[in-house]
Length: 329
Image (cartoon, rainbow, N blue to C red; front, side, top):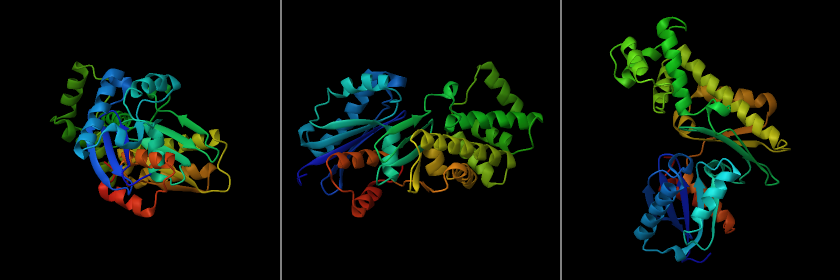
């Protein structure tokens, strides 16, 4: 790649789309931020509009055109099946990059923590997903398509579980806990009775308040036994999921398996109860594992994948630049 060539990475999720341009030396040139781009939730037309918006912002800020980009790498949420790719690929083909590629944001996450792009990635943010890639380049994805289809992870799921446990504790069907108090603080109600009546009147069946997991982590740090149990249950589920990925890939022979942990629950929460339980369950089947919590923002996983396509080595100096440009967001 010449000194006048540039790479763009586009990380598109359920809350925002983030585009970053770097130059041949790995220095950040510009960025753009737009609305969500998960086609499953907002439709392909809106998703494409937001992707284009983020790209145009980054190009304009850098004084560049599409033709100046050596490679564009998309890492997008909502790519769970081949049918999803069949919807998204034709839409992206209208963006005039000469060379580009698309992956699920799950594999973008794997690349942020695995220099070899081999191993397992566990995503636990607003939602959850898991995937792996072995030395033969084979890939497997497990979960990521919702509670009805077996997923028991993600901040929204954990918020619902916390809510249920708090109600049961308040009623006496669970051990005493500070979780009811945490709910009242979060939602701003004077009593549990008032909170429950309000939710019943509005027929709320599922808690879509991922930030409520911050309160769950607070309670665990305060030594609350019920909160600790819930976080251990999340760690157990993550371990079961990772072991499933490894089995379906045929195992990893003779190497320490990188387990890359991505998403706010893991990268920001970092609960020792969750992480220790995850490791315990992993080591029941896979004694040689390494838990890795990346510092890089996911968009730099896309940039690293673009560098891989261009056969540009990602040096330690480059990674340090990416960390300086913007760590996990």
